[in-house]
Length: 321
Image (cartoon, rainbow, N blue to C red):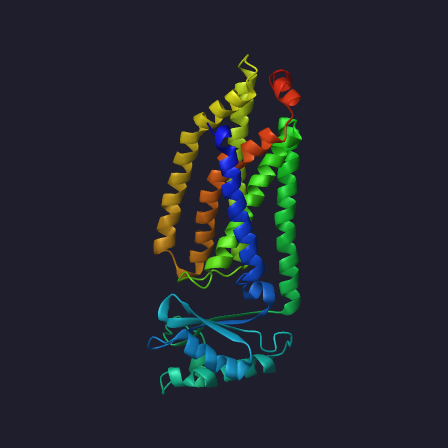
């Protein structure tokens, strides 16, 4: 009885959302260079290094810098906002020199500055990759990312409202998707300095969020379509009973689809590269939360936002299609 347990589901979802918003507000998000601007360097060392000790040396040099283990203990992802708004080859060279001088004691004594900065397929020590995002570009990326999520939610609402001819279906789907996005953000906010892999909020994370929205929407539409089908071909006026029956008949399909997807994602998460681990983790969490919300959030909200009179008219209304 899914609808009978909806109050428990509301409490669980409410607590998760409140905890997520609290974490985002108090602790914040680990925003990547894409959203704050700065320079990022992937630096590999000959021996394992202690990230906090390296970070102290970098802060002394740049004033603001972060160093995090990236993959193995002998590789760090270093980020700094030093002179990020200055666009010139001279400043780029200055940053590289300062970085080399700061890390010199952790590098082989035979490694020259030129060998440190030049990238090569055979290189094993020094800067492996580097990137830069200006403050202006990061603001544009932030604005476009927010608009991408907002517009996708608006399109979902309009599509379902037109497809099912009831705005309550659109409301249920949007509520479920918003629920999923907030919880994924909350988990990334709470665990970004706990879990041993990169959990930055960057463009890859936004791609993961949009993927989660699509997956959650797909599950929700399947449930809603089954509800409509049961209302079309049953003469009973028991709206809640038919809705529960529709949820039960889609349960095995939803679980099987989610489980199959999770197996693939877990394999990618375990054996894939370090650079995609955060992206895959976001999708993993999103699918788990999305499967739950399709059953325990979207449909109950659709049901509770509909008047008793509308529920009685639903069967006749759909038979006109």
